[in-house]
Image (tube, rainbow, N blue to C red; front, side, top):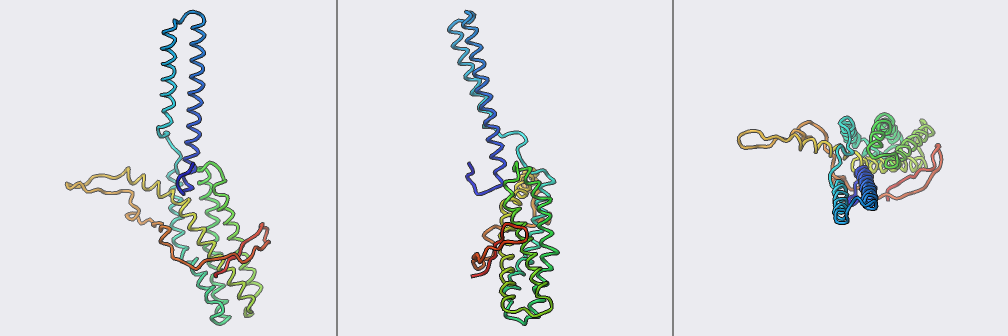
Length: 290
């Protein structure tokens, strides 16, 4: 049972459950085997009753001591390797870099209908170029490099399956935006075009912002745990005053610090407008501001 809202603990719980069951089966089978052997010896008249009772008590104590091994931490528990932890920190840094680009999508969507159509399309094309050249390659790299490492840690592809589906949805929405821009071409967008552009931009902003926050909290925080543990192990005393030096401090290494969920700026709520099929996907959800 998970008592914390942290998906990264799933691997630990799975490993703990398997180890506990293995120790329990060892205790049961060993206790039964030793008891049966003692009863066989006693039935042959080779073991007096008093010594048989003492032997049975010894068997019980031995089995209980073996079962207590489940309370100890397993040697070599399930943890990210150093290379995988460095990978999570790399993607944390990329998240910090693309946050401003994600916010540009909302800014461009807000401006549609308020500025000249030609200037609006220029901003939309610039936003689409950012999506294609910066954000989509980042999502593809996560799918190809980060998620396989997480799958090895968590013991399967199920924990990352939903986030992988979000990657596919993001790519689908980017293609839809590119197709709409191509359909408009050099003409000025009409009211229907502006509504479609606004819907796609708001939708991409919403899903990218949510997806990035979920990855930071559920997956990339694993790298923080590794770095914190490594830092605690390298804490040393220096100077006559006994000042502590934290060798694993992120700030001393120039590594980006992941913002807490409460630090994220508040935005207006979103609602589902429609479910649209196409593009080889089961469906996609478009969002718009209230």
